Image (tube, rainbow, N blue to C red):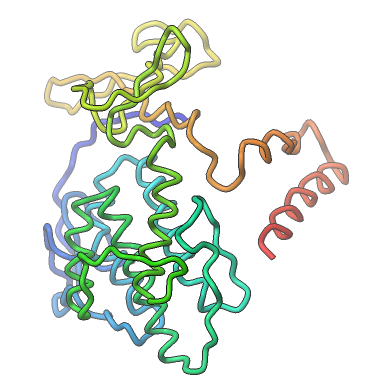
Length: 312
């Protein structure tokens, strides 16, 4: 995955008619984003739509409340955060669905959760919203503290205590389910997922393996590249035409920048959906046009059937 750091010139743009621009406030989900600002309806308020007794009464507002903080992350880091909170939220609501299966990423924490007997749909909606709210907030606390400030206010607005991080095994309360779902995902991912979130992961040249050095003042810090990747080409010399060459960017004001590869360590990261063993046993279909016609369709149908089977 090659992503380059490209300095951008942020140009202030006025919000469309009927919208107001806010900063460091609650942007609402699925609203238009402008560089350096968020545009929301003039008569809107940060807590509109928040309702524990309504489907999507928490997830949408939580996503909207934390969107501004998430958009500040580099693209690959955004993707990782999305993965963590989506897995946690999904696992947290599975007890209230008759066939949904949780993805257990760490032992313990009550996963898979016991199915609930639903006799009152309103109560079930409330409990699902509580569970996913805690799961979402726990992920924000661990990965994006700025986003956690906003999700905490959302929880407080509906009478939930954002500081409550307890869970029992098996989990009985909806809040415990949410906390446990997030804890399971975080235990699996944050310890050694190779993204180097805390900047303590380095590369040992002697063993050719990564290792963690806690308490060290490592440069350049969080999410830094512990593989010490150096592109074959540089900004001025094209040595291999089949490999990436960093470009030189300018801000138009006399400053010039060489592109930097963002998070090349992702190539060593833990698989997201399949284990290493499962990946080793799979053969991806050859790219077109190496396989053509009916043979190609059969190869791609086989891959699609694997996804459908795993989802049932």
